[in-house]
Length: 342
Image 1 (tube, rainbow, N blue to C red):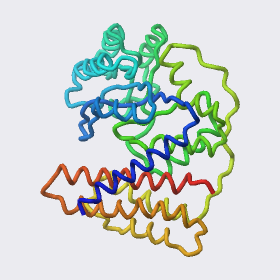
Image 2 (image 1 turned 45 degrees about the vertical axis):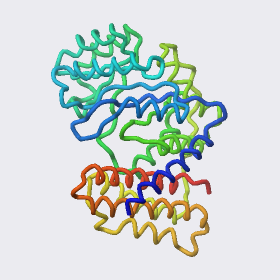
Image 3 (image 1 turned 60 degrees about the horizontal axis):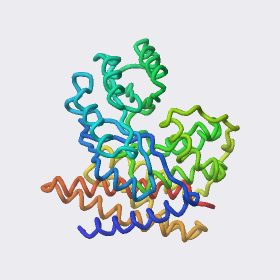
Image 4 (image 1 turned 180 degrees about the horizontal axis):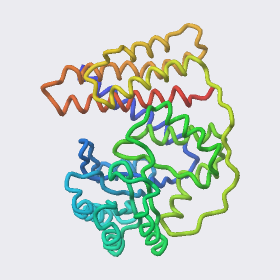
């Protein structure tokens, strides 16, 4: 059963090659959302790991900021200092952002970090408990305008169901010009190759051409990082209606349930949703045997990893590694179920 980790790594490497192959030729990537540090929820982002990921996937620059750190008080000062140190250790590759708490001298902390080389400001309304219309934001935006730096605002509530996330992402291109969409992995929560594969395939499904895809993956983020004015936006490209084979939708529905269970750290697949998804892959009349066989391969290893996690109560490191590996694979299978060309 421990071999499931090796099989998972082999599959991730296989899809890493696929993700790189689906990029437009010669495309560099700018990732506008990564975290480094230790979060109070137990997640951690490591600089060496992030840089290795970036170099493996052609990500030439990332915006990075701290997590909701145990020593976040006062004012995220210690965590922001670590972020600045990460940026200094990898100049050009990591653009440090200052994270603010509106209850703890935000303007003073923002000025301090911007003076020390921060390239932007990060705000997290949920974690720091404020609303987007909070009047205390006005001087923050005023300072950002004065210094010509971007402000990045967390727009979600933890991890919503993946189906809803994908629906919003596909619909995003119907509502927003491609020049106003940027690529973001949310490392360490978002992982490769899932992140790039999802971004590229949803953009293609929305009708973006190679130029627009390069803008989303690199050009727009690079212009923001360099303090350049935005380009004139074109019209949104997304379709008003989408259709997809029922088999893939069934698989995706089950995997949405599995992803929520894994995210909530259920010790086992007590509802059998991976089995239901595997059964959907075996439907004789699905008409997409090659694609469902690829998904099935991912789900077999997901099942084994989940069982490994359930049997590793005495080894927390192995349990966490197996469960997070299962989450990565079930998310990748879900991406394939929604974006596999028909």
